[in-house]
Length: 448
Ligand SMILES: OC[C@@H]1[C@@H](O)[C@H](O)[C@@H](O)c2nc(CNc3ccccc3)cn21
Image: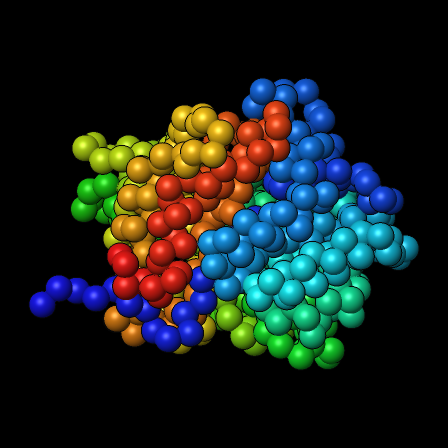
């Protein structure tokens, strides 16, 4: 009997983006600068000198982009809100024109039968708050709750699914430890403090929602399953450290109210003794958790690797994407199994999954042929279906990304979109993967 890949009735199919990567006009209509506005305009920080000044011009083209979503039959759209568009100084004065943009976007989605899924923070911290210490200042938990309340008041009721943070691991590893992302710090003393305050802020945002919210709120983590390069005790220990550092460092304080012991082992004296009371804030009941999956890592011990003493090992005879990530769909299934075993049967959404491959330009009206991206999507949707068959409480899937966009410091060259964007003309062109995904949605997976 052939395997059926039909998903449960009501499984939710969507696509995702983030504000700084697609909107453009970062300072329009009274918006304040974010740390990404500053970082992108710092020479040497961005590939090809690319910035989010225009990006996909979604700030002006959002109605047309909602029609692109409708053309795919999307049931949901995950977007993020630019904090400094609505609170130019991060706290205090509200920029109503900024709030109004998101209100218009939400209404446009609802009028087209698409469920809005709003992320409050997708890396673009207001620069004014970074000037006050940003994620290193414990007061940011209150600043974030203030911002969250402004948006709950403006959009709740129309927005039925909220996320506090997108991928706090990337913010701390990229922004505070290695410096490849905004705000570009390089300190193993700052990274744990920023990580902890991110989870305190997420907890404060969830607490604020419980006071006024009518629907659902959760938090989004990137998970990259780790596999030892050998059975040597050193490699197994290195894998354990790498797993705790990326996959447990943020979910544990949110869902267990503690940190894995490996973090003290990794950071040594740079790991603070956080007040026990803090975990009463970081640990809040969530309605769902969003998991972003792209790839796995095979890990070996390396005494010179800072600070993990662990490095990834490139795998032979397999496919890697343009961002250097191995195509490994078994890791998708493994991730769900691990998460349920460690944290219990929490409702889950895949809030990001996708791949960057080179896309050849096409003639007017054609479809961009992107077989590698379609293969990646097909393999991962099948792997996701296996997880559901194994009893994982998976409610929906958001493809990354609706549009080719600004891949942070990697610029516009790394293309994840279901739609190709010609950034010189802003023309959107569907890729073959978009057509395939539309069939998946129409058949609820039966076409896989
Ligand atoms: O890189 C693709 C996307 C990115 O465009 C999204 O804004 C972000 O949410 C996102 N997270 C990951 C997975 N995590 C990750 C791991 C290492 C470096 C950067 C991101 C991939 N992506």
